[in-house]
Image (cartoon, rainbow, N blue to C red; front, side):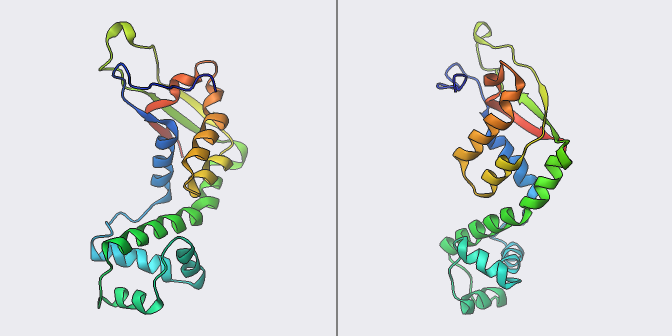
Length: 191
């Protein structure tokens, strides 16, 4: 796409890719467990989420948690503690399963039966850019009506697909200046 930034930040502009900000907002809407996995309470909450049903256990195995049922029981009972590598696997499996479980809810909430959701684009931070090189970029809002590809890419943790979906399904609707909003400070949803 012709508007893509190739050398972002060369003159001191600060920001993140728009699809990364969208992923953060979708993560916030997904409602992950707030207690860290290193705390006993956080570990137990994740393990209960991943083992409460046969379907959840299947999804956890598909998500990368491939330990035996005996090991899971030992972790739940507190007889053993998972290694750092297994803690990472538990966290990855939990986030994968949680994302797939909330897809339908998020699509219903964001699409709102075709009415869509208002998205706020907060422009990149140019405070470190010399005044002659600063762009005139302002706060913008847009009503995004089609979230299917965006949420699907987020649920699959596919960053490239999320970037493509975000640009083609949302940002280009900003008009001819859409390239100025490829990098942003933050993105907010009215959801």
